[in-house]
Length: 357
Image (tube, rainbow, N blue to C red; front, top):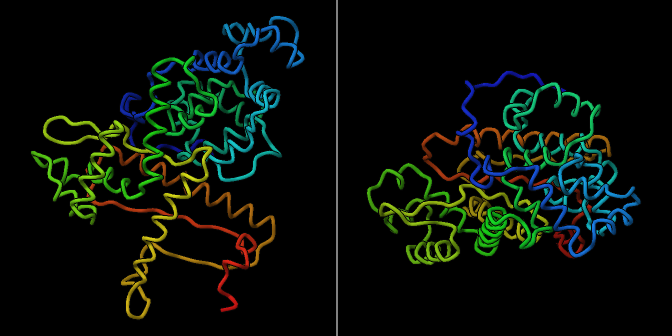
């Protein structure tokens, strides 16, 4: 495992890495304690101790911050309260993790997917000494749950979705608002997948450099009818996904990741843009104008190679995240769509197959 790779660019101050959702506005230790209060609900702290088979006062120490709450404790609490943590994690990672829920393994899977951050970068993002992270990644030290939350908040956009299944009005108002806003915008993009292109257009240099808003300009940038642009902007504004200032619209959250406990939402978005990608083949001879952007391989695979290929795909997605993060301050000239499809033939039912036709 390569951990000591040097960063490709000079270091930026942490304040420049604003992921729009939580960033450094949150006390992650306090968030951990708030989540424990939410999970306890109306039960007494001593009742939680009995449920978990702990000595008296253990839950109080976690909830008050007197004792560190670790990943193994989070797993145990979820199991005791009937939450399907493996299923939740699978919705983010795209793989079954039920056989290995150890903190270092889960942390490393998230690290790979969301930017392939090396030890140096992780240390800076998480404001933690590299030696501590080295011990963690070597499985010499159990993961502090607050550090995991901090990774989700500082290095990805998925913390709201991770909290969502547990959230309630008992959470800090800032957290509750962010979770709600994130959920609304994600749901909008699932219901109306073409809205994602409209949101992206608001970040393009052509729109940002214009002095006033123009529906026609957005229509030209997205290929949408002007009427759809107007409907989309109203939807986004009504749901507080965009704001109006200085005669133009601005995004509230600049990137929404569809990873969430809802497979339906991510599938809706993926299906829309998959169908859009097929339009490139709608030519007289079924051949697109170029081979740019698509590749294929159909192959027999052992379980071992299947897992290795999936791991390479996760690393690839992590590199995409890295590139997008490093691109944050660059002017944007185009709207690109990235789709990745990998599946086994046995996932397709014979009723959906055209092999016999």
